[in-house]
Length: 130
Image (tube, rainbow, N blue to C red; front, top):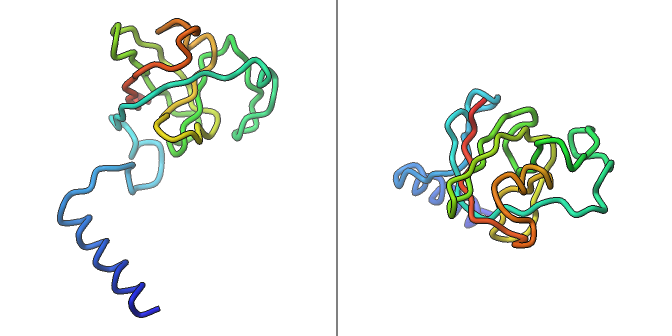
């Protein structure tokens, strides 16, 4: 136990010194303003239509919504396709994706607004704008 505690303390000190960049440590949506992240975006399969999301809202293909692991529900994020520069603004109302390398799951209409759904995945940058 003592060794584990020492390791944890050492890790926290190292992270503070090195300026580890990750999600904001403050609570509330305001702390997230301007937060950016790059990675892969996917979109919801048809089987999820009208299923309840983590926020309690029903998922609908035609709404501009998204899932992110940590950005607060109700936050608006701009998702930009790195390849073609097209962007879409979505509201976070679900949690996920839980697949390594993916940072956001988009509604089908949001995904098709910035890329072709036949691709399955897009390289994107997200930014919290509200």
